[in-house]
Length: 339
Ligand code: UFG
Image (cartoon, rainbow, N blue to C red):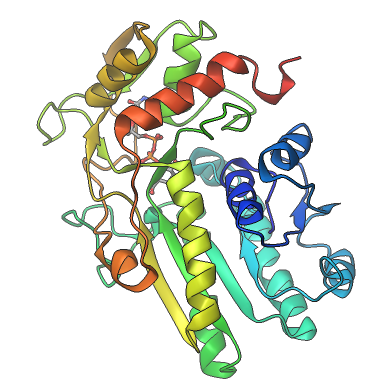
């Protein structure tokens, strides 16, 4: 698991451990905190081997593959490692192409040499043409509009070519919608290093008193209440989507497969605020400000293909997402840095 100490990675490791899989984590800790590791062990029942490594370090990565896990070779890789902030990608595109695309190239080359040719890749709804009419389907129009999305799309194209060149490759591309929430234990969750860019961590930080108020980016979109609509998905559901994708690759012989991981339901910013207020009992002071450049009006998934082929559907509702995000934030007001 590359990026296994991060937000989605840590939740996925826990679910895999809980199902008896052996997992090794590779993470540079550039955007993750080492305090997550003992908590993964606590929740998963055992401590997975951890390698502090950037995936662009080809020699280091080859050593990890030579070592394998629990005395055996790896069967598959789940590739989360990468940079993920849209604004930062616009300011520093080279850093994004290097970390994300170069990182994927090095990883895939090492995998090929080690004859480990099953991969589940973290892609994003950002690869879609955001002007397209929702619900978004896997075969719908693509067209990322920032370097972050372009790197995700470039990696998708690269992965699509692999099984054509060598049928030993089995590839699962997962396009995430908006991951939110935390493990129900409150022990692991999202821990943004700086001011959060995303709605949910901002809301929880306002609720806990770390920030004064939320700015709602625009209320003049063509949506029922005028605010942006997104498909929020509980991070535990998302983690289970990876387990389903790994099991799918294990039984499905060949090729490259793309699946949306979303709920199929859209929620507006104001609906999210109200759901969070109901779950937490706290008021979320907010003001309407200008639209944020580059934001789409409404984005949600058609999750039917994942249900059909992976046998996976999101189960947890908005109330669970808010409750678990709040439990994590309350127990860890400063994230993993909380003493
Ligand atoms: N929003 C606010 N105030 C905030 C933050 C967000 O009103 O402080 C609004 C946004 O305008 C949008 C909604 O809340 O309508 C969700 O915004 P997020 O930033 O949480 O999520 P995005 O849908 O913009 O971005 C997500 C991922 C990106 C990915 C993108 C497109 O975070 O990585 O989806 O798929 F690129």
